[in-house]
Length: 601
Image (cartoon, rainbow, N blue to C red):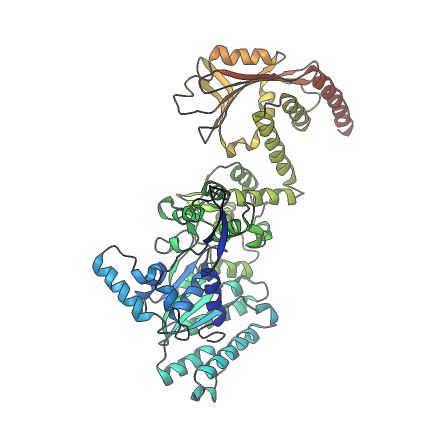
């Protein structure tokens, strides 16, 4: 076992992954130690069928960070390497039993399992490791070549190539093959790091691509290549320099998608009998990526972190610096700011994205001032965000995958003080309003309305029903995350101002009626008279129903609020109304705020 040949580091990584466990607090209150290892060895069965097949033996699979790409590489090193005895482990895994349900194919898979296990030396290259320690690309590649020489010397101390060792890696491997007829399994991790790194020039990156071509293309010493990273190879490179690869990437992978990230079935198994970290919680936070036919894919890293630390929270910071997203998003592109806000509100946007890959990174460096249309810029922007895993893409629509990423988008808004901080504050304010509404805290609701009024309405304007609706839409801006937002909807015997129906039908329905220069009681009475709650239960809504009457009076410039709560059978449970004492206090604060705003203007 060496540094590059039959890598001892990668074998140890596989052993660490295989032996991972976590503490599970079971439903009866006891502590159980469970294995965290998820068996992805079926991918080896797929790869065994490609070995030594000239038109199929080079595979490039690219995914966002922390979807288990390197873990697959570590498993391949452990399975194929001559210098590693891994039979005891792999005999327990899926690969040993075959993955096909057809008897004749399954028999072949089991035969290939035995045929190829520990039968090749592996070459493992991580083109991100240690790269910043070198001043030039040549120095970096020369260092790798010297590591390879030490491994060859250890493995073949009498080899003639040691005396005439070349400064090109591919020539040394070719000479070794000529001497020994030795074929290798080639595993390349972080293939795109040098392409993405600002350390290297445009010419350096092109030379690196040529290096990969010489290393891989049409080389008899390669039995199979697994190459992985974040960026796909992209069109031009795959048609010429690196056209030896069959390529699979985040938006086009029907073959291998289930081996990267965790499937719903795998996460359910990990959460089985777990009282603290349930599948439902993990699904809310870390699900959202889609495989073919909409099959759910979870972020591997975040699920493992949550289970091991017994805490559901945001682990994306540990996945990669989120300032990448800040650099990606150009808020000067027309419509992007509005799109991001809609995505944060839980909407899916119809966008025609394309494959974004290494060629695009090269073009960015080569043609910094290239003129592009706004549509082209947006398409490239969203394509890049999907490639890096900031957004997910399914059936022509982009969306924020899960709560973990949603929190990071909100953080992004907060940090962009010049042009997005206002929107972050709007979301935070909206979350407070939704919480106050569900808690039936009428005084707090009026306080938020009056503060928001000063943000949205010019002090000298007289409020009408239209302006009042603007305020309501503002304070409930973020309700679309969990509710279907309907405005002026025909229901019962009339037209309701707002009805918020929960996406989970066992949660609370919210019906809002507005009045200007009238009472909150009058608004509630109209809801009853017009029966805006008609047929909710028949439509499957089984949670409670909140009837909210909101009124604004121009003479006092104040809000009043009344909330009535009913169960799904329309039996009244409670009633609350904003108090006069709170009204006077808010009026004094409001008068002071309006005075300050008028002076400022």
